[in-house]
Length: 139
Image (cartoon, rainbow, N blue to C red; front, side, top):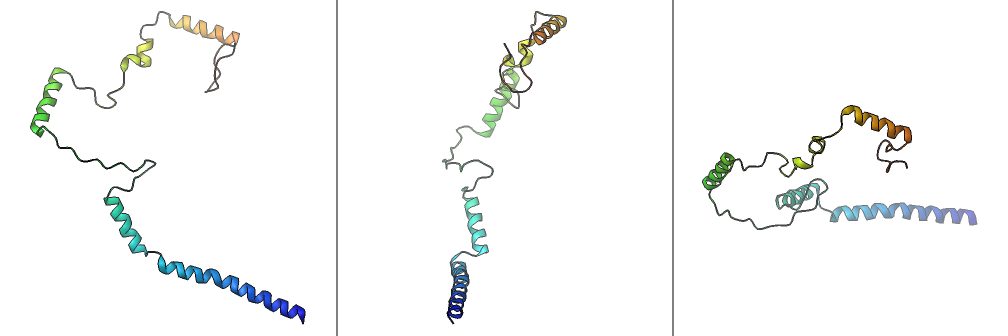
């Protein structure tokens, strides 16, 4: 008799435990916004500029500044600068050609054979840097 009562009480507890999450789920479903409401909120936030794409952060709102020059004045200035050769090259205008690899090796004082001989000698002595990003050469 005791085992029947304990089995019945365990079964009752299981029924209550299984029914509680279902009741909680139906309760939260009624308070959560519908799919249409979520889509409308997302559209509004996107129009307001509150949603960013990628890994960036949301841009801060800045007041638009009015131009002090007309379009014709800006075009005239650009054409004048082009005629004088003052416009930077398109693309990466901050690239400095004097710091490029081509500029660094343009005035070599050694021949190719001399460089090859030095490299072969350094390889024999084990002074070449390891392949990849391993670090400093051996000493």
